[in-house]
Length: 159
Image (cartoon, rainbow, N blue to C red):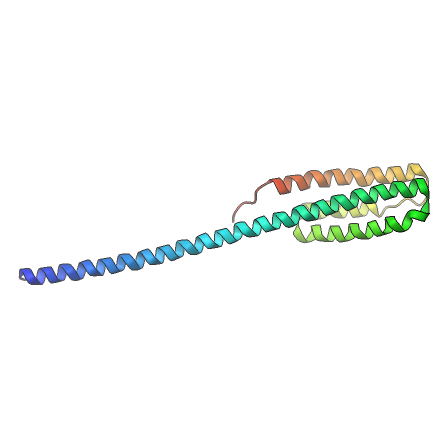
C-alpha cells in the first residue's frame, strides 16, 4: 500500500466516522427533544389538573358553606325559605360531581360525605335539630378543606 492509498483510506474512514457522528448526534438530539417535549406536556397537564382541582374544591367549599347558612335561615325563619336551601343542595351535588371528575379518590369520598351529611335534613323545624345538622355538615367540610389543601399544595410527581 503506497502513501496515496493510505491517505485515501484515511479520508474515507474519517468522512465515514464524521457521518456516523452527525447521524448519531442528530438521532440523540431528536430523542432528547422528544423526551423533553413529553415531559413538558406532562408538567403542563399536571398544572392544568391542579387548577381544575383548585376550582372544584373551592366551589365545593363555597356551596357547602352556603348550604349550611341557608339551613340556619330555614331553622330561624321557617320553611318558606326551603326553596333556596333545595337549590343550594342541587348546586352541592353538581360541585361534588366536579370534584369526582378531578379527584383524587380521597377527596371524591369526602365530597360524597358532605352530600350525605347535607341531605340528612332535620324532619322538624326545631333550631336545635338544624344546629346539629349544620355542625355535622361543617365537620365533614373541615376535613374536606384540610385534605384539599394538602392535595393542591403537594407538587405532583412526574411518572
